[in-house]
Image (cartoon, rainbow, N blue to C red; front, side, top):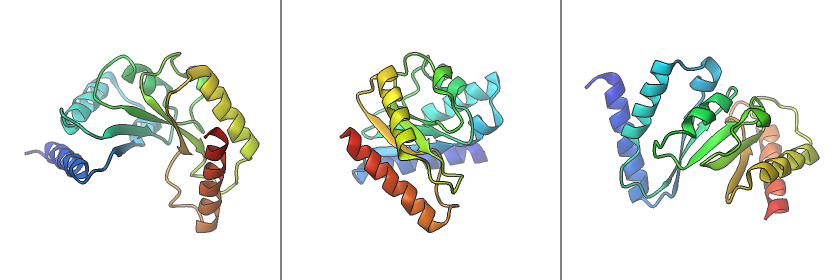
Length: 173
């Protein structure tokens, strides 16, 4: 097998194993497409790759989180096809809400806390944005999270950002 086919096969086996262990939510991260962009040929390869990784009889919710760039174009073309994903993560630090399609057929994962910046967001601004997002999309389920991994931030800053997410989530429960 080629390296890419081997990687896809391994990824699928990991998903199957996680489902057997009872994991109900599996997130695949995709930072390269929003950062570098994607050609039509690469779109087809991405779709084919996702379809080959996601088990036909999946049990878990499968999400793909797009970060490090504007995800509007990606969400637009993914909204038009069925590739087996249930949720889509959007980096709202880099993606303008008005650039997204009017209807998104996925559970939304809203990256509203900046994982690349040590400045602490204003809670009221995040709450206002989440309210706007809810008003526009009326999602049955909405996950709020950071736009990208917090691993490169100082631990104390990352902890404050995670605590803020918890506080904000409670306001919407």
